[in-house]
Image (tube, rainbow, N blue to C red; front, side, top):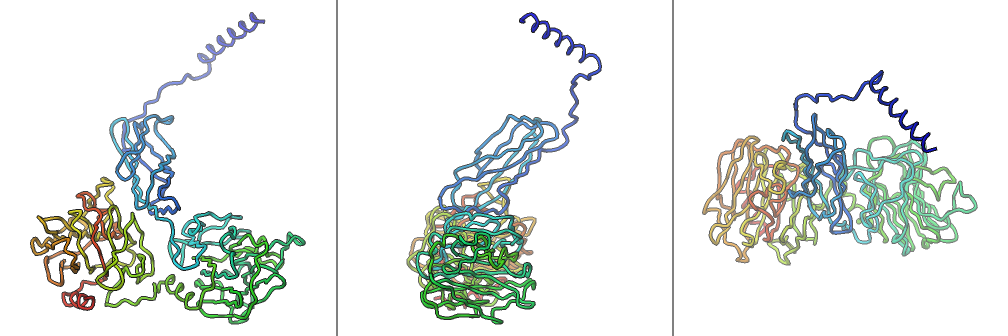
Length: 595
């Protein structure tokens, strides 16, 4: 047997040798040609502007990328906020490297990932993205137990949990608030457990909808019990609630049904609860359930209310979102193909003023604040124990752990700076040919230099030490002896200009005194004011805002860190931004009003 095996192996090898020489082309090297280009890098995740929000103060990010070269890759390096976190030098496919790398030290704040590829001839190519890890969401309203903004994800930010996704819902590509909204689809909806929602006899829900008339009836929000007698056409209404819509001629009528444990009650407003669908308009819906009263609201107005003897939650363990399924299907109230945005659930009854306040905040009406001065586009008063920008009603992104001063120039409180801490906010609607800022500072001379207000572009070549000054502006301070000197730098698209008042712009720190600061930018000049007096003024040929998509408040980070202008530990109060160049008279009027 061994002899036969050896003979077979010998004949096989001989056959292979002749076949390679006769009729089968041998493998031969192919010249790769000249090295004509730099390597290319594409980062597929995170994408520019991504937001991560989890309960943990430190989390992970899965960096997905691809590097390619026309000849041969030599190395690929990943930098996170300017520090190298990974290096790759071995590639199975020497022209293309596609990978996913997990980095598990992501803290709160904005971060920059830069991936650089180098080829065998020393040519390089890179790509960078910035993303933000936001602190865990803090409910904006008392009793808020669920919040889904639908900004490209279905996450419930109150509980940091993902719902169960049934079918294939999607995202609308538009919204009332934020980046996106839920888009319904056939046989598609979301469910979440009702833990924390049904602990008492009160519940409220608020949300926006852009109503699609197809299908002509649908479930919107349902918390109900199973129907063991009719599992495929469930319609047990003795507990929980069902909020849904049905056609009424060419309108859609919204109705609420609530069970008290023995029977159900209807809250049907008739024509008052009708909404015209397919109009491309967003409408606000809300309903509240208490121990003795139920009300349904559309666009902040009551369309039906009445007495009620208390909801029963027996076996109500699932909330269905944008469908009656699986607990309310007996009358074909299935998936809603409308858009939904800003869903909030409360474990308490909301008043009509509560609901109208939410509408005003979310519908571009801000927090109900009316700008006090002509051209005012932004106002931070720091008086509500939070960092809400009052014109828009939106909350700032908080980086690090800033606080509140326990004192103020105006109102109840002021911002208190802290190391590695600042606020940031999108510049949407804030930038134009003219710009002004006014605010108060109680100066802490430590550290001896700091950024105060920065609207600038990213510096992809120097992540972690950014210093591109050809667009936007940078207002900051630096020590001069025992004083602090305040300076403005502004970019016109090609170069930057300095507005440094020298000794005129010096202020003593650590005195406990509040000083007022302002600067204005127009198409012809820039002016810096301290306590209403001009300390620097000069010609300027107009600001450029290229890539200036965020404002940093009380730090140079992340866009102006190359010279060490990091977080300011001073107090700040009454920050206002304007879309015009204020006159000296207007600056002094604001000072007088706030004294």
